[in-house]
Amino acid sequence: MYRVNKGVDRPPEVLGIRGMNFLLLLAGAAVGLLLLGVIIMVVTGISSGYIFGAYFFVLVFLYGQLVRLSKRFGERGLSKHLSRTRQPSVIYVRSAYVFRRLNSPTRS
Image: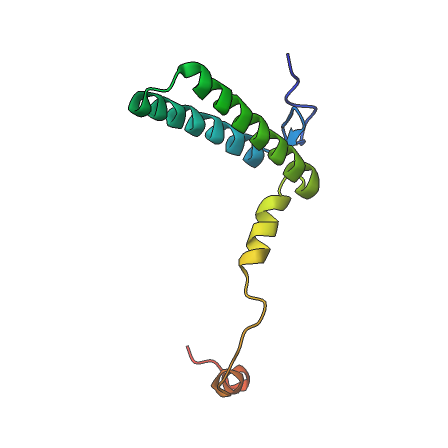
């Protein structure tokens, strides 16, 4: 059996994936791929052996990517990185109105 908690105030770590957000992402991917495989099997009639092989291959690939991201960013670093990339690098202000309002007293 795998040890999930290594102590108090430590994030869960399972098989090299550290942090709850990575574990939930892996679980969601596993369930989503399973449903996608069932839909493909019903619609196209492909053998379940091929579907299971593709499911296993894609899930192992995603697991490897999540382990890599977990080591690179840490427990909460991925969400911090994604929020930093969503911020604009430059903000253009074409009017002096913004700066004039900085020195004016605020009205309630």
